[in-house]
Image (cartoon, rainbow, N blue to C red; front, side, top):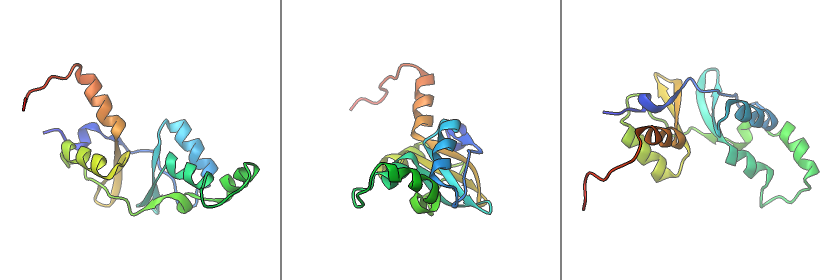
Length: 143
């Protein structure tokens, strides 16, 4: 059976809660990712996405000028924008179950945790890459 460990990105790039949003953006760009686990003393405390960063910068609640974004990028941290205590999966979770979770909760990624240690991240892109490598899909079970 295909498991999360077969598809995940091992030992993903991570940040700490006190990382400024400007650095979060730079790390995402350099790592080519849209989600980062947030670790404090090696423990998973949250996950931050590019959408989380955009929401902070483009809050519909607070009106501000674009020039204020520069200050916000340096003063706001990952802790201000992340989702705390994210739902996780283990490396031996069946891949179909992780896909169900991503679909049900409308997440782009799930941290992969083993013995309280982040060992990977499984993303929608990981599933798409797997399917793309398999080639043309066929329908086995017609209803």
